[in-house]
Length: 147
Image 1 (cartoon, rainbow, N blue to C red):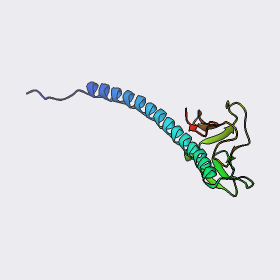
Image 2: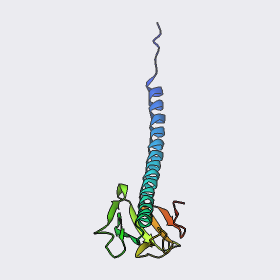
Image 3: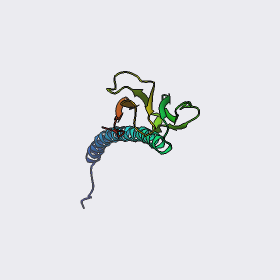
Image 4: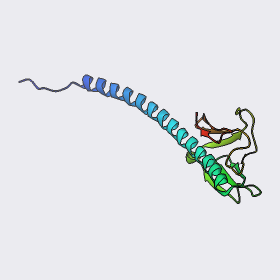
């Protein structure tokens, strides 16, 4: 009588192949999750810039957007502190944000909107998570893009 089944060598080979596939899959999944978190943080920064623009247009007063700390953006009407008196939003996943000038090379103090909701100067928000950076660009036309 012959017993059917798998030998120990066959089972070890199958487990080794599954282990390699699992290791590759976990690395790809972690990379994908980091990119998705970076995208979510950039979209959050974009939504703050759009909210400040819209509020300036609705109230017909100048607004200013500033980086309160490495993870938080705030905006408030001109003449008040954007970080203490205004609305604040912390980026998800503790992503870092930095406000820069138009070509994203040098740091800028803040982003000002006119009473019509248009920025007074083009600015760039650099969002960083897990060593990767994504830019949010505020154009002079008022459009906010995540290229």
